[in-house]
Image (cartoon, rainbow, N blue to C red; front, side, top):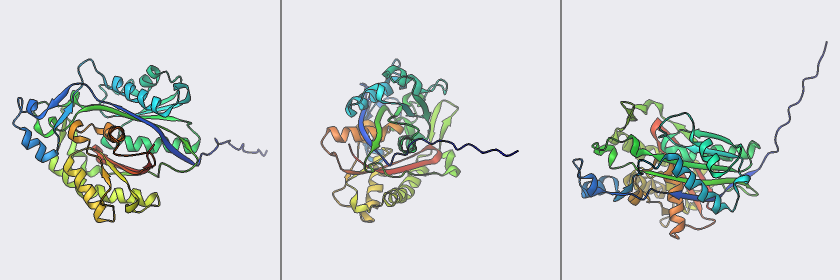
Length: 328
């Protein structure tokens, strides 16, 4: 007996994607360096010199990661001009949910009013937003999704030993989001990503409740390894370093941000390339830092629609990812 194997039907392929809108939120409570100095051996000058942070935001006990994700996602949706019914998938990048079940994405979708959407969380730590943006773009191009809400949200203050100056001076709480949809011309370049699992012990949860970071090891890795990843993302997009108008790296440490910018300029990047420095007043907000920095820069008039921006995230794992985008 012979049989004909059926041919599966595929969804229509979309040629290109773009960011349709962005939004972000920070908690109201401002935590200064002087306040931290009351509970640990540090001071304002020491913190500014080493990490470049002046203040950061901590959420209150009744302010949850999901709450911030809902607010940021709603703002991005409003900025895009779309309704909740126009969105069919939600990705929430995070590494600080109090429990892995239930995930954040399904809760966020329901509270925003996005019915029956595909919803999942993604954990690539501080590289999470770039990972999620790449996944969203590829889902849309493959026809598996139409328009996707991508959110990076973290409540790192829940996981800090408030007496540990190696972490408590750096990390903070926030959420940032972007709506991704189809485009006639490519406005989101290919994602370039990877990991250095041999360095996994440099950032982890100590005693399953406190974030631990081997600061010097992470600093050396980030200042030497991330600029080459950024250059690969530029090459993957078919561009040159001189084509980049805006650099938005993960806001890990101002000295790391400056080192990446310096190496890009040494490789042909322009002197007038705008560099995100949101960490100064926001701290390190992990997966939220890149979309929030973009939102703040746009509100301040530092970047404009059509600018060519390089996004590059890196963090625990050690994971990294980057892509070139055209700003909305």
